[in-house]
Image (cartoon, rainbow, N blue to C red; front, side, top):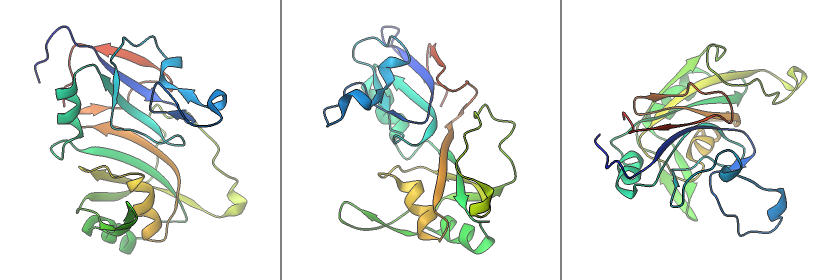
Length: 194
């Protein structure tokens, strides 16, 4: 995708506990961590899509609204690794693939069909180990979910809808861009290869 050279584009590994924004208007402002603390982004930089505060992983930023609109479109896949409560089974994965009903905007919404599969390990990824909970509280497993839409907290709501609440959520891919950075690392690129 060709970009005008005057725009800036960034790839970021958003850490757990950061908001995907630069300004926070809510209460308890001092306790909120914002993206501007990680890097000196130029004015006009915006996150392309969001990861909620407890989510982590790949986040793209740009100063170009057209690029943002394209990447947020249904033309670009977004892949998430969700660590879930329990050992997710084939039936639950099949439900995820077909689409599940979740709460959205005060009503109900059925998610679009997606790709989903069990993954055995995430050790090869640059995901810093973060203790979610002790094994005494039961088993955990990882599932990959690939969507082209992005409703508010959608992946978390999807896994909960099939009986396996998300304990940890990491976005590992947007289009052709893979998560390859260490937690908190930011790089500037000439354009996104999505």
